[in-house]
Image 1: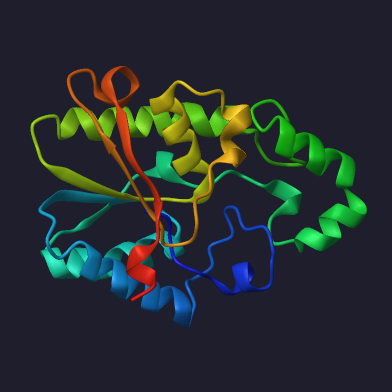
Image 2 (image 1 turned 120 degrees about the horizontal axis):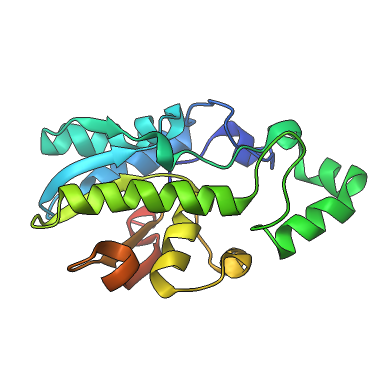
Length: 201
C-alpha cells in the first residue's frame, strides 16, 4: 500500500525523504485502509521509516493488534535538491534533466540524490528479507512509496524499471503480489495493481 496524502501532494511538490506527515485526507485514507483489511488475516506489517508511511500503516496495525516493523530499504528515492520543490518550477528551471529522469529513471541521478537503480536494488533486498521471514505465512502488508512500489512490481514482472512510470500508483492505493518458493524475484505473480475502491465508499 502507498501512504496517504500529505500537504506536499496537494501543493504538487515532489516529496522524497522529507519527513512530512499525512494530512486530514491522508488520515481518512488510512482509516479506510484499516477497514479494507478487516477481513484479511495479516501475519505482519512492514513500512518505510518515513512518518507518512508509519501513520498510514498504524490504523491497520491497531485493528490487527500488530506492531508496525520499520524497514529502511522501503524508503522513498533520495531526491536531493529537488525534494520539496514545486513540479511546475522544476519544469521551468530543470526541464531537460526532469524529462531525462522521467524517461530513464534507472540511470539518471537526481542533483544531490540517487537514481531508481539504487531504489530497485534496496527494495529488492527488503522484499527478499520479508518473503524469507514469511515464506509459510499468509498475507503481509508493506506500506511504502510510489517509487519503491513501482520497482517491486517491475521486479515481479521482469519489467525494465525505465518503464516504471507507466504504472499508476495512487496515494493510499493497494497492490498485491503472490509469491511462492524463491520469493518475489523467482515466483512472484502480480494479482492487483492500484486498487482505490476503498477510498470511494
